[in-house]
Amino acid sequence: MGLFRMKGLEDFKPLMAMVAIDFAFAIVNILLETVLDHGMNHLVLITYRLSIAAISLAPIAYFCEKDGRANLSIRILCYLFFSAIVGASLTQYCFLLGIQHTSATFACAFVNIVPVVTFLLALPFGSETVKLKSSSGKAKVIGTVVCISGAVLLTTYRGPTLANASYATAHVGDAKLKKTTESWTVGCIALVAGTLLWSSWFLLQSNIGKRYPYQYSSTAIMSGFGAVQSAILSLSTGAKLSAWALTGKIQILTVLYTGMIGSGICFVGMSWCVKKRGPVFTAAFSPLVQIMAAMFDIPIFHEPLFLGSLLGSIIVIIGLYILLWGKNKEMESCASKVLVEEEITTTNAPQDQMMKDLQDQP
Image (cartoon, rainbow, N blue to C red; front, top):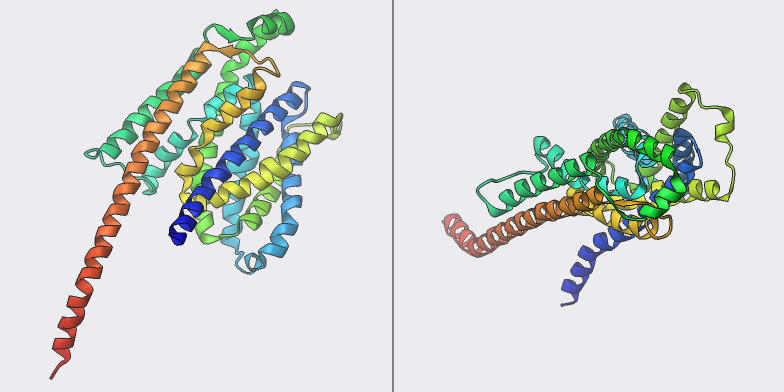
């Protein structure tokens, strides 16, 4: 009984970790939207954020994962460099661009399709399979189609404003509303690109975790690579020196929080969850970020809520959990097959040993 309880607790840890991570990410998105609205440069923010993540994790990795230095190879460094591109520098730039041109709540809603995209990208590599004759396979296909339909609705239809319509009209103004309408497409394209990159990172991290199972070291190195990539990209795009100066407490708080928590502890936690439960399980908690972000964004920051965003989000979440139901049924089926095979092996073991003993007799 004690062993069963310990096993249940161990299975529960990844779930608790992902809930905490998503709450932290919701706060990250709200802070990012705030500083971007005040004109902070995207790439400068990413560079500071990743630099702080690398600096804060480096001492922990040095003292807690001493074996990691001995097992670090050129091949692993190449994996981590590419991981920084698809999971840190370029991905964060796309999402920041999307948040600036849409909203934190909408960006979180769009991220809900990450588990489905991760599932689709995993199919060619054999990480996921679909058996159309089984109920689990049909659920995976239906869930994927429903989720993609919700994502299309999110990007193509805004509809009437359901919340904070009067505030938006009174405080934003016609010029900015026109600009927001025109830039909505740019924000959606950026979010599509970010979603594809983010989904690719989960698959890449699954491979890295098997070859280099040191979460603190890998995250610190990845963040360091990402900071260098962002800095080079920022300088190449002609960012002014004045853009590197942090002005105001909110910018300093955002850089510190998003660096230490958002790109530091959260990435370590996600890497651990990918190692424990796989990329699709880890990506499946994305809808929680939207719900938690909306709790701050709509009542506190008076962000307008559109009908298209609400309907699209609901459809995406329904499709996502149809997909997850199918995956859970598939895991249960696989577990049952393993138990049956173990029982057969246990039952046949004495008979096999008896036959071997008889053969050995003169």
